[in-house]
Image 1 (cartoon, rainbow, N blue to C red):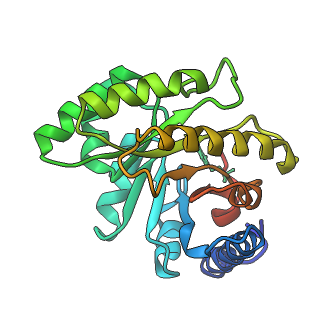
Image 2: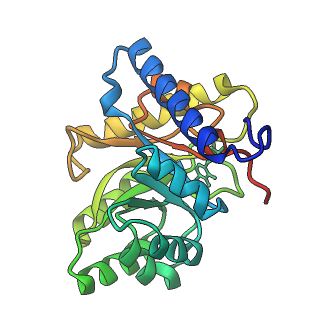
Length: 241
Ligand SMILES: *Cc1c(COP(=O)(O)O)cnc(C)c1O
């Protein structure tokens, strides 16, 4: 956005961007007849310098999303312990111990092996771990996520055989510069969640979370029911890597 337009502008930039995003969240919610308080902003801080993250904290942001375990671990030790962190990257089962330890929510569980590994580490830690199932709603071969028709079987197994608390679905539709292209996919994720909730398969079927929408399409995602939006570049500026 305004990244690089000023000399020492990081504080103003992050603060202004955050205010703008919060306004957009509120406007989109009202447009859809929803309460803006239903929607939580996950500030995606992957590859972002600690100083910029600290500015977001200064401006009141408390919830962050990270994609890489080691990077997140390093940042967490340097930031206030009161912050909440969601893991939104690809998770390998050999990183499950650290993920279970560091994060409040793992948004990207898409197979049994990872769920089982998270569960055994969470038990050892005595921690009730919340997760979302990642769904490959656009059916892209290269993308993570359980296919929509396989979501119910995976959810039943996780809810039945683990202590993980599955409280919703997450998706990342195919990238398009036109956010309207994502709308039918966001809508499809919501319908899938409603179907699964009607069968009583989530930890809280009256308050199912939908993590969908990124910098270019979070307004549309909110209109289609998102409760968590994962916004990176619109908050922190475009990533260098
Ligand atoms: C990087 C990332 C985001 C944020 O993307 P922006 O377009 O920068 O907002 C959101 N979700 C996931 C899973 C990501 O990896």
